[in-house]
Image (cartoon, helix red, strand yellow):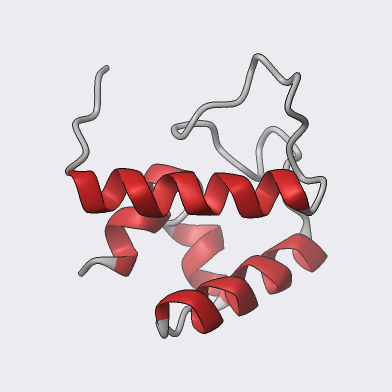
Length: 86
């Protein structure tokens, strides 16, 4: 399935990816990661990582998310970037 993103969603997705990479949640050499990869099922984020990502999103985008949002709906970079724009 191909998911189309507008330019703002893509930009936010790329910024989240850089955050994940810079904080060692994703390796630059990881060929299995893409913006539709489930961050929890594949072990990219744990509870500590979720807190760090929530704080990043709150600071960068002034958007308040709960950890429940992540566990229930926001399991991929694409879903997170779409939510930030709603």
